[in-house]
Length: 285
Image (cartoon, rainbow, N blue to C red):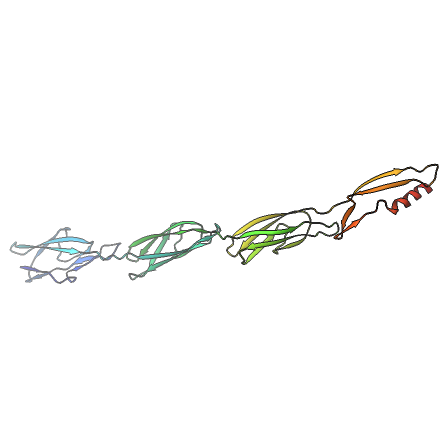
């Protein structure tokens, strides 16, 4: 009796499953006859199946108690999913990062995904900064793991401005001329409700602006508009009338001797004719 060792892979089939072993060994024995089989894994059939990778020995015994021993190797042909990732970082510490996962189709069948944040889709988005792990399982039960890290990208821009103080008693005329560098697309939100880059017609006070760039990064800057209106300081001295006569007088002094009026410095008189008229009215009763 001899045991034919068929050319590989005819005699053995490698294991290709990560779920249930599916390797096998198929024996061919000549001449035909009645034989018994004793395998190293405890099997007693001629052919054995559902094998994991490894070495398997069989003792074949004929009707005259003659036996022969053969050993076979079952290999492993398990293919793990091949994974690559590409990440888009979050902007300005917001949850707007994303990870694109690519599962290379090295075997037939579908894949399932289990991310560390609970997601089950291939790609994930709306991510905050951090590291995300994923386990990918193929239809054969084989798994592979990988990870990707979302970093934080902050835009860098600077805010400066030129302010003009309020100087009018009639109409607010303060202003702030804003400069944002580098040039780009920005939105503006002022504490007085304005949404333009520059603001005008301002009274004295604190003005705060929030500038936001196209990546949703924001910066805040404040400006103080001063009060540039100079009110005249008035002092007066008077001389009483005597003997019922109209000889009293009032000397009015303005300090400083000038006042800003409609954008022009106007010299004030020492005394107003209104005072002279008022004195006469007082005397006449």
